[in-house]
Length: 370
Image 1 (tube, rainbow, N blue to C red):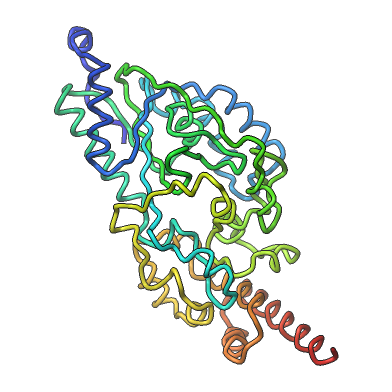
Image 2: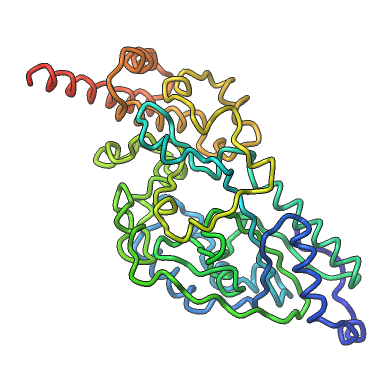
C-alpha cells in the first residue's frame, strides 16, 4: 500500500545526498537477494502507444484487466500520486538443473513453466521490497512508497528497460546481457527524487529464434505477441475451452511455456537462483501427466499450496492435462486415466477428455489400417 507517511520536508530533502542514497539502495537490494537494481522516472514513453495499439487489435484476449486499467499503465503517476521515481529490481529464479528440454522431449511427462515449480514468487519478493523500504526509511526518515510484484497495472518490463536492467527482446521478455531472461521483476514507487539510470540498449540483432520456435506461432512479428495463441495464456489466463486447432500444438505443456526463453542465446549466461523457495517442489519438474491427472481436488490444493499453479484452478488444471494426455503416446494407463474423467462434474473437463480420447481412437485406427 502507499505509505501514509509524510514526504520529507524541503529542508531534509535538500540535505540528502540522493546520489549516495541511490547507491545505498542498490547495495541494500543486492543484500536482500536481488541481482540488480535500477532507477527510472515514470514516463512510459513510446510503450504507452505500443500498449494502445496492442489492445486495439484484441491481442490481450480475455485478459480484460489489461483494457480496464490501460490508462493507469500509460500514466502511472495516477496510480501512485506523488511518486517521482520507480526502483526496478530483478531476482533470478532458475534452478541449476531445470530438466526443461528433457521433459519437453518426453510426451508422457508434464511440462510446467520453470517459474512455477517452486513457491509463488509474489509474497517473497513483496516481503523483500518492504524490507528495502524499511532500510530506506531508516536512512531518510518518512517517505512515501508503494511496492508492486506483478500485482498492479504497471508496465514493469518497459520501466525495467528504462532503469537499465535489460532490453525487451523480440519475444517481449526482458533480457539481460549477463543474466538472460530467467528472472522476476519487482517495483518500488517512491517520491524520493533519486538520480535515474541509463536505459539499456537492445542486443537481439538479426536473431529470430524465439519467433520461429514458438509452438503456436503466437508472435505476429518481433515484439508483438498475440496472447490468444500463446500457450501461457491458453493454459493459465483462458478460462474456457482451448481452441481445437491449437490443442495439438500445445504438446505436454500444462502450465505456461518457456520455449521462447529456452532457445534464446542470451540465456547461456543465466546463473542459478540462490533462493531455496524457487527450488522445484513435489517433483513437478519431472512428473508424469497421468500422475497429475489422477490428483483429486484435495491433492491439487495440497500440492499447489503457495504455488503460482493455483491461478489456473483445479478445473483448468484438469483441462490442460487432458490436452497433454491427448498429445501423449497411446498407452493403457493414459486411456484409463482419461476414461475415469468422462463423468467429471465439469463440462469443460469432459469436453477436453472426449477430445483426447478421440485423438487416441483415430490414431489407433490409422495405425491399425496402416
